[in-house]
Image 1 (tube, one colour):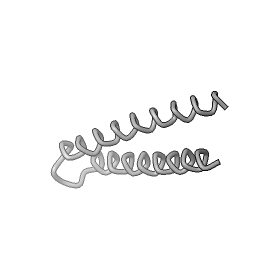
Image 2: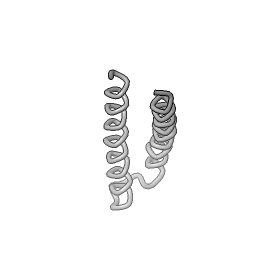
Image 3: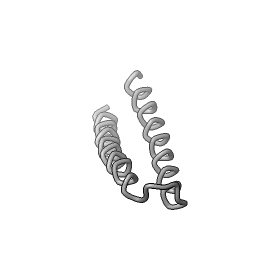
Image 4: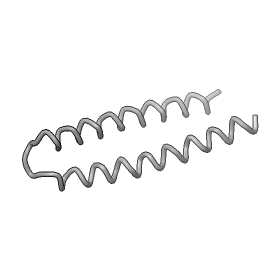
Length: 67
């Protein structure tokens, strides 16, 4: 059981770091261009992908903690 708690803690720490990096990405995308460019659109797609991944990982952590 100790190992499960450690892995859960590691995953939570990873998720917090991912959230911080996602926040940086969201702030930085504003500096790419004022218009709608392919580069800016790519960054927006990547941000959306990371949001989905983080949300999915959060749900898995919550499900593990419920058991």
